[in-house]
Amino acid sequence: MNRDQALQLVKPQLTEHRYLHTIGVMETAIKLADRYGADVKKAELAAIFHDYAKFRPKDEMKQIIVEQRMPSILLEYNSELWHAPVGAFLVEKEAGITDPVVLDAIRYHTSGRIGMTLLDKIVYLADYIEPGRHFPGVDQVRAIAEEDLDNALIQSMKNTIQFLLKKNQPVFPDTFNAYNSIVKNSGG
Ligand code: DGI
Ligand code: FE
Ligand code: FE
Image 1 (cartoon, protein in one colour):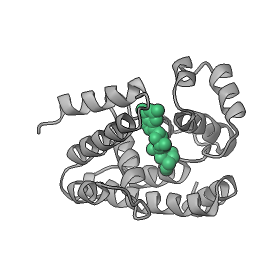
Image 2 (cartoon, rainbow, N blue to C red):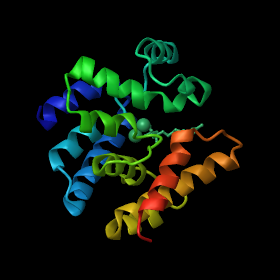
Image 3 (cartoon, rainbow, N blue to C red):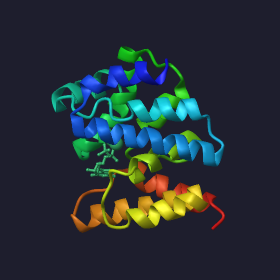
Image 4 (cartoon, protein in one colour):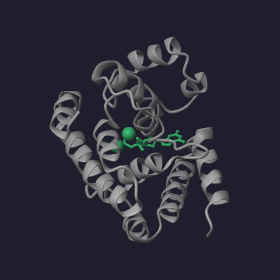
């Protein structure tokens, strides 16, 4: 599937704002893939589809999580987490994407996971630093991303966890596990 075909499938699923975010993630993921030696076409495809399920009704997402036997712990946490695994499922079913590496990058783009692949990391980070993002600390992560992928990821995960703690929100286990895993495995 080429870029225009993918974008045509995604556009009707999203608001204008979220579509522009998706274009930003796509452009950023391509740059990161180029910089860090990932498959540029896979990065492009995963980025285009990463928020495919963002606007599905909660009830529909919940039903998919149950019927597809996804980890039921998801239902105990913020429903904002659901669009990632549900998106991976729907992108396979409705858009015919079958590459497991691409589907995993979509599945883990919100939480991260233990042992993230290069593509997982690129989509997670591109989602965080795309040019349309304007939150505290994002410029620092953008600067680190020019130099070191893992350090940029660690900083973005720290920011996300701190943000959740400040709001007294629970932190999903994969989010903590992703942070621990990458801190333990990166050289710095
Ligand atoms: O879909 P996007 O807005 O582009 O970004 P995203 O997929 O990273 O989703 C961000 C949302 O997910 C944001 O509202 C915070 C929430 N989130 C991310 N990790 C966790 C989380 N919420 C909880 N409760 N726990 C987490 O670990
Ligand atoms: Fe998302
Ligand atoms: Fe996103």
